Length: 192
Image 1 (cartoon, one colour):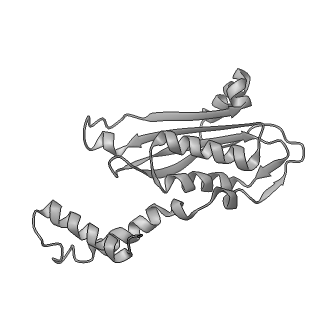
Image 2: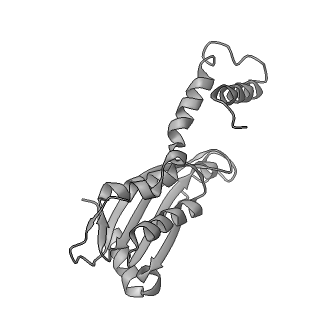
Image 3: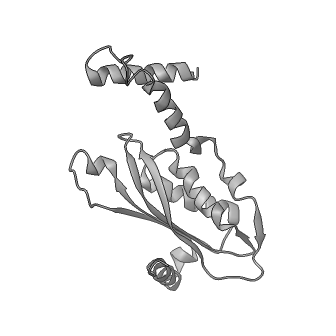
């Protein structure tokens, strides 16, 4: 049986009592916290209600364009499924069209679909690449995520500057060194 919103709020109340070492989650300042937490989680984890096919269904004729299409520096925040702490950074999403292109906002939305779920960075990277490959059928797809992880910054080894990079290369980006090199050159261009 799927838990109700009331069940979820009660679970938050239980956690608050645990943290405070009391049964005082109804005190002023905390009394509305369970509802606020569930409202926030509904927004933070909205990716569970999204579908890649819906996001990438509106395509346009590529009109013979066969170069790299790259949207870089897409900011994202996701939540580590191991500690329920945020990780944030930027994603670079690229593809080489065969016949169809997609609006650039759709590339950012596909990142959001995956970021707004409980995740690990490897899965989010692979998921975006899988969706591009399945929905656009490009000559190649490339996805690179760079992120700082809250679980590394505020607990455990407490490394503030550590950045994790993951990549998924498909088609010509996997097979051809020249395509990967051109992509990396485009990603490393200075910002506007």
